[in-house]
Amino acid sequence: MNIKSVIGVNIRRFRHEMEWTQEKLAVRLRITNDHICRLEKGTEYPSIRLLEKMAKLMNRKIFEFFIEH
Image 1 (spheres, rainbow, N blue to C red):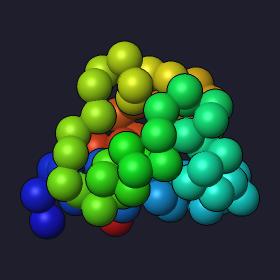
Image 2 (cartoon, rainbow, N blue to C red):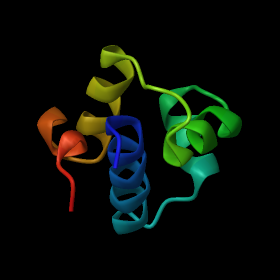
Image 3 (tube, rainbow, N blue to C red):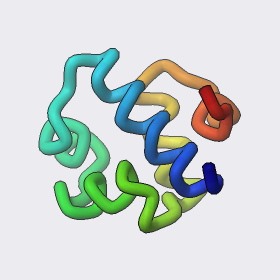
Image 4 (cartoon, helix red, strand yellow):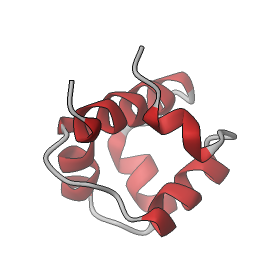
């Protein structure tokens, strides 16, 4: 699996663990639902700044987004 896909799978997994919809996460991050969708599908890389925001919101460490399960 490529790194974009690994990050995307982890974003989706962490979001589901929080019981959040894509829309709820997008609102909290101040980005669009489409952006969340592209990230989760692994077609786009998140910026480091966005990963920092996600990690904080989801009570995660940034490195956890890079671990393949």
